[in-house]
Image (cartoon, rainbow, N blue to C red):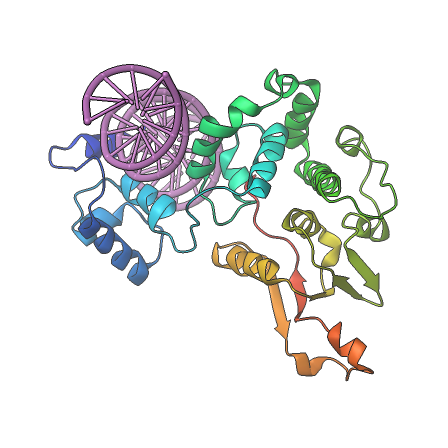
Length: 282
DNA sequence: AAAAATTACAACCGCCTTCAT
DNA sequence: GATGAAGGCGGTTGTAATTTT
């Protein structure tokens, strides 16, 4: 057992309860200088009378840059409800889909708002959920793919568009072998493919999430139009320590527009990937 | 206006996993 | 392989703020 940490937590003089602004300043300054991690050394070196766990929690749930506070959007709610049905109470995994929200926030939001609105079938923990959990335990990649498809289907249901039927389900996804890259391209119908470059239309973020799972995108370039949220997502993913890497190409790298109409359609951003994988807690 | 109920959020606790030795 | 340290995670609790009665 972690005897020493327990002892430290019980040392007289280790402060508990709400953090003061002064403590926040000390912790923030310390992490800015030394970076997050090695929390054991934080109380000793910063002068904070807090245990290491408390410091880490305060940083990850409150002080860390990029945390979005306030009301959850309807779309965030949908993502959470869907992922909770798929993954169960794996809040850290769910939080990886909402980089601006902490797992603690999501957990609190679920327990206070979303849990009660859960459909009875889901609340009972249906067979699908059990399949998912088995899937996650046995083959994470299959689970990712099935989850990706589920998210794409959810987004399609939210904003129906004229796409061909995908005809797959979460239940059979785990049983099917990995599809070819061409088949994978169908995962996100909002991406248009052609000669090594795909174009991303203005897309609900949930669809883009499904696209992120497409490992076949290594080395592929995408072009983003009106994708401020998409850009933010990528930036955040990178800042959060993920391994999703992209390179932004200058607009000058694009061939000249052939017409004003063509110019109007030019992407705001061109991205290429050295790896489409990002860290996913396993 | 006051009390009760509800909500939102921060923080703690204990268990589990990972990693170094 | 066993052990301990450290970090991470989910469950739970405490409390302030807000809403309802």
